[in-house]
Every structure is written in C-alpha cells, then in structure tokens.
Length: 202
Image (cartoon, rainbow, N blue to C red; front, side, top):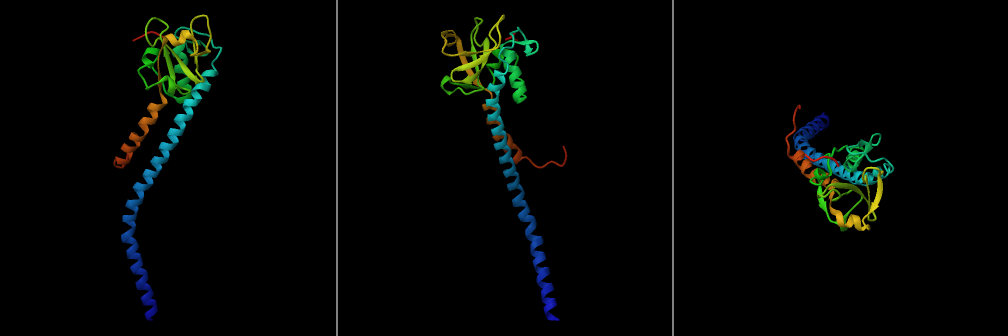
C-alpha cells in the first residue's frame, strides 16, 4: 500500500511545481514570441517596400505611349508628369503622393545622383521654377516621364545636356517607409495589451 501512496505524493508534488513554474515561464515566453512576430513583420514589410520600389519602374514603363494631358490623373484621360508619378505610386504601393511636382519634392529623403535606384523620383526645372517637373528613375541613367503637351509618356536619359542643366535633385519614397517600421514596432512592443479597442500641375 505504500507504493501507491508514494506515487500519488510524487504526482501531486510535480503538479504543484508545474502550477508554480508555468505562469512565470509564460510571462517570459509571451513577450519573446511577440518580439519574434514583430521582427518577422519588419522583415516582411521591408521586403515588400523594396520589392515595391522596383515595381514602380516596371509600372511606369507600362504607361509609355499614354498621351500627355495637363492635370491628367489616369491613363484613360491622359497624364501630366506629376499625374504619372502619382498614378504609379497609387497602383503599386497604395500611397497617395501630393498632386504637384513641387509638393512631391518635399516628401521622402534626398538622394545623391550617384546613389539613384529604380523607383526614385527625379526633379527638373522645365517651367522657370525649381522642381516643376518630375519623373521616375529606371536605372542606367534613364527615367520615365510625361514631357509636355503634344507628347506621350516616354523614357529620357540624363546623358542629355537638356536634363543635366535642369536637374534639381532626387527623392526616395521607399526609404521613408523603411525608416518608420522599426520605431512603430518598438512602440507596439512597449505598449500595454488592450482588452478592446498651392501649386498647379504638374
């Protein structure tokens, strides 16, 4: 009769230990699991942002031949330079950029010519004021843009003296998204768990 009693005692003792240890272990595991999930989210978002940046160039190329229209916002009605950029960003990333080239020049981060990547925005002075024209960089010193009335969306090159003389700078939109992700996740990790919850175109 002693062995069954001894076995019951051991089982009860182990059960009590499990009851004491489990809550502490759960407290350590839950935050770690959340951080791992947050890290995975960051990696996925970063990969998506980088992929989207490359897709911008491809989407812009699909619009070659669309006629230029002052104030145009869609391929069906025609596109001006900022309308082209805005349309491509909306289709590829879901982000709505400002309507004019000048306003777009204040968004994102500045990029040196030597660091240009496909999907970056390039700005020019074509209307006697800075940042009056915008295009999407394709790589290999080329960019796609909607030039002017009577023309169509086309590919141009920085090798042309016309564009070199009028170049105002470049901006990168994808970088802004990537910079924001870590801070947003950091805030999410730190937060307690809730029970419930001017210028005319182009």
